[in-house]
Structure formats: structure tokens, C-alpha cells
Length: 303
Length: 240
Image (cartoon, rainbow over all chains, first blue to last red; front, side, top):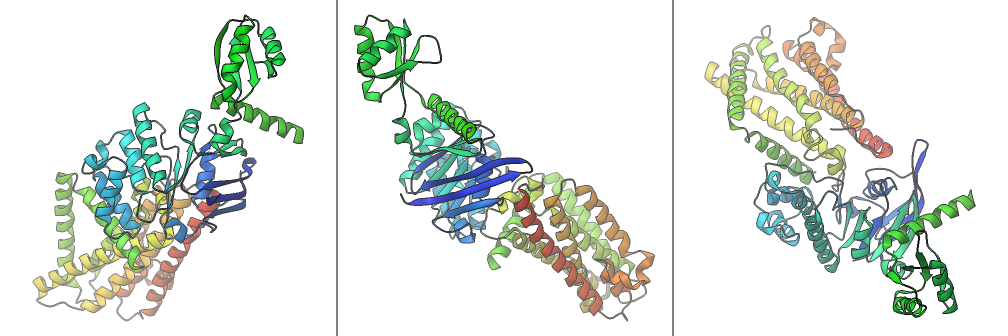
């Protein structure tokens, strides 16, 4: 895998609190990579280290095999938590100023192109102060789409957006990835990772709990059924050659089997005379909690 | 460097454009400041040929220098529009950007004041008495005060709530420029006061004042670079 960003053994400590505990991961080129973790997991700290706003206590960060430098900054866009622009200037004027700061020639033309790319072409000449939250986020992204950009780091770009705003932002990000821009996006919303991630880095309490293709992670999902007499359901499935065990909730049974076996599992239970009232694949949030539990167990064993 | 000066020019021009959002205040501010500067300029032009009566000229120069001192710590818009952390993402060090902002502001203020002074001199005396001497004093004042302004910027980057300290320092600068201690030798090291002391006593050699002006500037630039490193080490820019 060709990496746009490579992080090796990154550590960061604030006083007594160790926020990042030697994390390592890779962000592939030209793909949407999501950095998933709950609030306080260390996502923003990682972003600030990647963006050179803070110095790590240990470890190494490489962009295209090179450390963070003015040359890397020239090809990398970064959005922090909140868009900040001149409210009395138009969207186009604001982006033009940012491009001029970056020494972009024909900055006006490129600013208008960037606004078109994020779907703000029609609002290019409206004042930033009049923009909705979603438009502000998209303008923030437009300001990172300067000529020559190769990677964009986005820290929770859909925070505070409604369903429509999130959808617009994600559609735009998918278009960008198709154009070859490497995107590394932090989020705490599992649904976003499930829908849009090509590559996923899962952070839990300062450790990388998973990194790899979303597809590979999705393959690890279990089948979950809810049926009457779950004890009988486990026995029936075991007789049919499935690895099944009681779930956490009442009437719930977990089956270690890939997605294509779902119909077969339901058939076994129906043939056994059980009433099945739910049969589905484990969602990413449930899988996330399972991975988190594994990490915690490993930590306890190590301790 | 050319790119940085260009960026600074855009930044200052954009910040100025903000003032036009409130046209009444903008015009009122222009008229009052213009009238005051013009009055001071006339007074400065009338007295600057007489070495014993440089009070008006010193006030005129102090006005410009203290304005520059006020502007530099606010060079990055009080942390709202382009806070230091956003500027740190651009492909050049923050210290150079702030240095360029200070230089462009100093040139603008210096050119404005020099223009008013020369114009006032021509109107009042039909000549520009001791223009070179006065402009040199103005340049020295701006240099040393730019250094002090950069020091305050550095402090603001690392510590919160430096604004009140900066305000006091601004008053102190004004007071020191006219303090009775002007006859003491250490005054040459005080930003602004040294330049004004030199202006009021033409027999003083220029080099100590120029030396201290450059020293302040170097200290200011070093402090901003050091503050940027400290902020990256510590993780939080205290600005804004």
C-alpha cells in the first residue's frame, strides 16, 4: 500500500496523562481514510501533531516519506475544528485571500474553481457571515483545495451539521477522493465510518484498536438473531455447524459467520420451529465496542 | 521574503477594509485622527527648526510609534479571523509572517507621518526644515517600538490576558518618551524614548539609539520565534 501519511510510535503526554500511547498507522494515497474514536480518545491531539501545531513526545510522522516541512505544508490542507473567515467578505474573497497566502497564482480563478468543487459556486459572491453552518464547513474545505494539494486532514468536518449538510459534505469528499486527493478525516460517528470509509483507523484510549480496509473489518461482523428460546437456538445452530453463543440481551444469539450465511442461519432456526423476530449483521458500532473490549482485555492482561 | 511582504500587505488591506463596514465610525475616525495628526504635523513643522522646542514634533512621532506598538500584538486579528494557529499552517514560520506584518505596518505609518510632516512643513514654512534629521528620528522610533511590539506579540502567544499589560506598556512608552529621566544615559535603551531624546538633543550621537533600536527589533523577532516553539512544545496557543 502506498502511503500518503505514515505515523510510527507516536506518543503524547500532557502532564501525567498519556493521550497517545505509541500509535502507528498508515493513510493510503487517494482514498478516504477515517479516524474513528470516541470523544477524548486522542483524535484531535493526533491531528494537531500531524499538522505541526504540537510536537510529539516520541515517534515519527511522515508525509510521502518526508517529515512535516514547509514543502509538505505547501501540498497539505488542514481544517481544524471551526471555520474562521472574515464575515464581511464573500466566500470567493475569503478563499482567494487564503490562496494568496499560499502564493497561488491566479488565486481568484482558482478560488472560484475550488468553490465550484465544493458546490458553493452559486454562493461564491455571498458574504461568509450569511453562510449556513454546512456552507461554512464546505468553504473551509474549499480553502484547502489549492492547486497542488495532495492530502487534506479534516478534523470532524461534519460536527454540528444536520443530515442534509452531512450528506453534502460527504458527497463532496467522495468526489475529492476520486480526483486523487488523500483524505484523512476524524469522526466519532460510527455511521459515517460505516458508510464512507475505504480505510479505517480506530483509536481507543490513545491506542490504535484497528487499522486496515473497512471491507476487512466489515468481514469480521457477526450475525445477530433474536428468537424465542435462545438456548435451543444456540443448540440448533451448533448442530448445523455454526459457532453460536448467547448474546448480551435477552433472546439474543450471536453467530460467528459471514454475511452470506444469514439466510442459512434463519432457515435453521425456522426449521427448528423457533420464532425469529430479528436477524441481521452486527453493525459497526457493536463491532467497535467489541474491538474496544478486546483492547481493554489485552491491556488488563498486559497489566 | 517578497511573498511574506505581499501576504502582510493583503492582510493589512483586508483588516482596513473591515473598518469600512461601519462607515459613520470610519469617516468620524478618519476626520478626528486626520485633524489631530494634521494639527500636530503643523505644530511639529513650526517648531522642528528649533532644537529647544521639539515637544510637538516628539508628540507627533510618538503618536505614530505608539500606534505601531498597538497594532503589532493585534496583527493576527485578535484570534478570530486568522488566529496564529491558522497562520502556523501556512508554509512559512509565524515569526517571519509577524515580522513582515510589523514591517509593512511600520512602512505605512512611517510614510503617512512623514508625508503629513513634509506637507505641513511646506505649507507652514515653505521649506522642510531638518527633514532628514526628523525622518531619521521617526525611523529609529518605529524600529525600536516594532521590536517592543513583537515582544508583546510573543507574550500574547504564550500567555493569556496580556492585553492589560500591553495597554500599560503603551501608556508607559508615551510617558517615558517625555519623562524627566531623559537626561539619563540608560534612556537611549528605552524604545521610543531614546529616539525622542536624540531628536531633542541634536548633539547626542545617533549610534547608541540606532544600536538599541536594532537590539529591540532583534529581541522582538527572536521572542516571536521562541514563542512559536514554546507553543508547539506546549500545544496550545494562548492567543485570542
